[in-house]
Image (cartoon, rainbow, N blue to C red; front, side):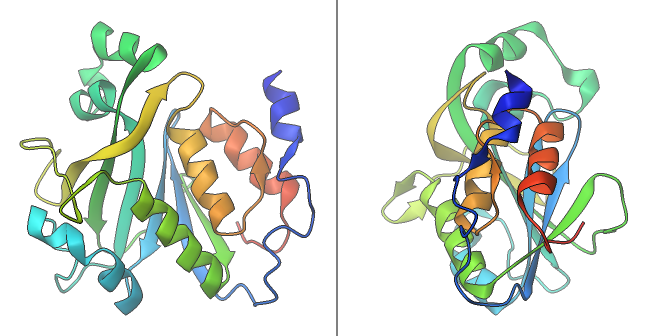
Amino acid sequence: MLILCTLLPRPFSSSFGGDGKPPTREILLLANPIHTDIALPVDDHVRAAFADLIPSGLPVDMPGVEYLIIGWGGRSFYIETPTWSDIRPLPVLKALTIDRSVLHVSIAGAIDESHPSVRPLMISQEGRSRMIAAIRESFVRDGGLPVPIPGAAYGADDAFFEANGAFNAFVGCNTWTAAVLRAGGVRTGWWTPLPQLLDLSVDLHNSGRGR
């Protein structure tokens, strides 16, 4: 079933993402064994689009910031499991059933694109704008600003925010990543709950996107 859902392209049309513009913008797909994030190279467009994160204490505009890294996931597991050694039964149970969702946003300097966990992808300028819009729509907002979760962070360079949508075993972090990639014009498999399946589906259903 998982392989079939990976083999089926989403959407079916092979012309999907063909906005007639060259793929001149690079983004990074970051993966560990169970989770994926999207890393956006920071430029003036990205700084302006995510300037509303600054009031929460996330210094998107700080000199030296080269990437903005965004991921979506289940509130309990995501916040309470910063490392593998922190895994506990209750957050895992919630991740396998249903939980409120959160967005995790962090800033970073240079990222080694040759690392096995990093996959560069090329998209058009218009595709990146659609991707940014999709990410922004994932934030719960109050007075127009994203809603930070007090005290929830792994360190000084990241923050958690309330997110739209419920998390469960069928609609998880990697299906959110896939949806954002599709917003940018990257075809994925129909259902890719695991990072390995998402990565395979990008290989199968796209050409000229880089590796």
